[in-house]
Image (cartoon, rainbow, N blue to C red; front, top):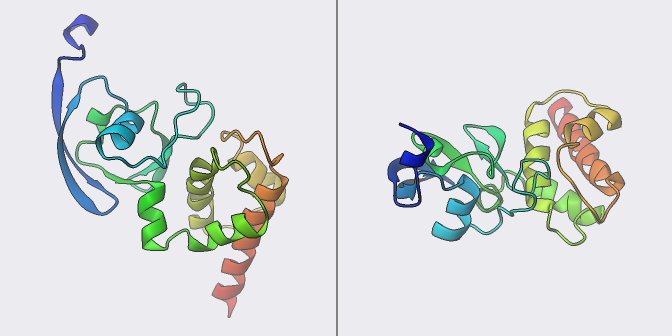
Amino acid sequence: MSDSDFDDKTFVDINAIINGKPVNARVKSRQHLADFLRHELELTGTHLGCEHGACGACTVMVNGGAVRGCLMLAAQADGKSIDTIEGLSVSGKIADLQKAFIEANAAQCAFCTSGMLLTAYELVSQDRPCTRDDIREYISGNLCRCTGYHAIVDAISSVMERRSADRRA
């Protein structure tokens, strides 16, 4: 098959688990996962920024790892487990991160926040010690134009410290 064999009239059937629920859908072969989530499933917390994978606004979790939804095709979601900001919020898995972002004023315009929270969730889930520089490096693929990153690093660092203290208790 050549590229010309795939157009907006070519569809693929997918079966995925999205936010803990089975989803069976027919998707355009070239539709990006972020567009599918936003337009077909109305999961609008996944934002589209650059559409080149550079800003991180479209970050979602695929099989437990952070992935850029603008770089992954919806067809590639077949057989995968996908969590969006909505799913992780409802489940409470990121409640401590959300609270810390609010307390640190790390979510000003909030355009980057969902992607930043999912990246932070991936980092804190690794359960490893990190310096502030490590956190900065880890979130470096997520762009924020409002906070200057200091508040975001504060929020993530505070959650890591609290989780570490809870484990020691």
